[in-house]
Image 1 (spheres, one colour):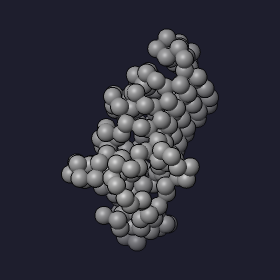
Image 2 (cartoon, helix red, strand yellow):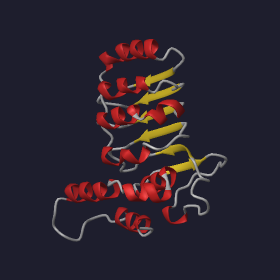
Image 3 (tube, helix red, strand yellow):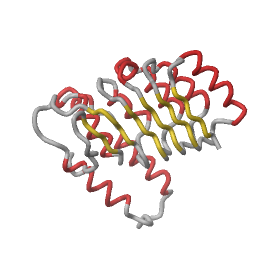
Image 4 (cartoon, helix red, strand yellow):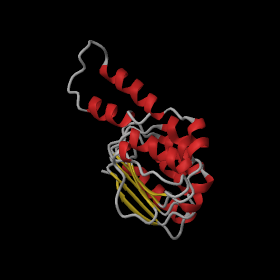
Length: 202
């Protein structure tokens, strides 16, 4: 399983596939493999370790409570007691995370910040799923969604369920129309009056 990180890096370095096939289909299939949830793994090593492996396998990074350094290398994940490293922040910039992998987040209790930037597989159902996770509803304080072209106002509004959210940045989201901006502002102002909302949808 530790080979996934190296394999992913090598495949990402390929400019052209050496065989004739639809490369989008290939990458879609490969990313689905990286996102497939291993429930036995979650049970055996705990939600934070299993989620760390999933996120890094997909090209994201994580930061643990009590640490300033971001964990970027799948093959260098920390060892030690399984309950020692709790994910505090997730940066999914340019990653291939997708909705089928979001069950990995279900057991995370300490995540305070999530950044979704240039995530081509993130869609409304991902945000809806994320906003339904009870533990994240309690812990998540900050969220940034940037340049995710498949997100619409439907997915954004679902984030109102993150009742402790204090900061939300939404920028460069072509799927969210400018005429929906005022409605989004009103919905969040009503549902989360303490939220600092920053909108730049162009």
